[in-house]
Image 1 (cartoon, rainbow, N blue to C red):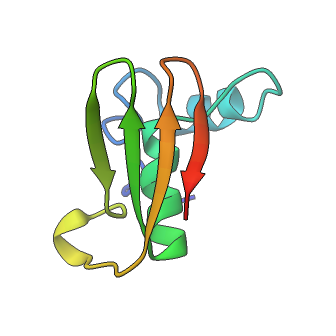
Image 2 (spheres, rainbow, N blue to C red):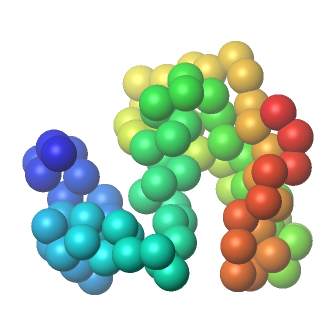
Length: 88
C-alpha cells in the first residue's frame, strides 16, 4: 500500500492502484510484470523470465533496478499465457 511507489505507471498504466488491487484479488486474474518486480524486491533475487514465444530473456531486479545487485536468480518460463517456475 504505497501509492506513490506502486502508481498507475508502475502498474502498467491501465488502472489506478485501488482499481488494480481490486482486480488482482479476483480468483481468475493472474499477475504479471508488476508482481514480478515486487517479488524480486521481496525475495532479494533477480527473476529472469524466459519468454519462449518471443525467444528472449527479461530480467527483473526489484522495484528500482538501479539500487539492486542480487546474487541469486530465479528462472521463470513464460509461455505467452502463464508464468511457470523454471529453476531456482
